[in-house]
Image 1 (cartoon, rainbow, N blue to C red):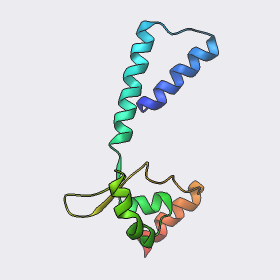
Image 2 (spheres, rainbow, N blue to C red; image 1 turned 30 degrees about the horizontal axis):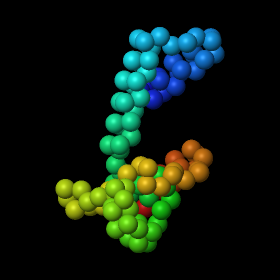
Image 3 (spheres, one colour; image 1 turned 180 degrees about the vertical axis):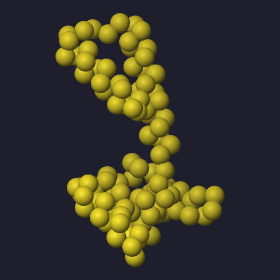
Image 4 (tube, helix red, strand yellow; image 1 turned 60 degrees about the horizontal axis):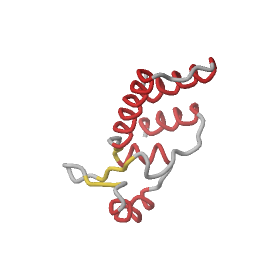
Length: 109
């Protein structure tokens, strides 16, 4: 379970039971929030994974790479490949079965 999931569960449990968090709980929540924030800041996707996740076209990626890089949402990897931060563009709305089929089709091709 990720730090963010654990944090959300603990806060929900405390709220549901009417508890006010003590210093130890606040410290634990702070540590989990910091870990989740660090993980979110360091999550980069290859262009192929980014396109699959967001539905962005190759044309969109070419046109927007420079602007996104200037804003810190895109970068070049050590192998000179384009990488995109997960916060650059929201994931597309696609049900799991359709996404799974799309992945299978991409491997079949």
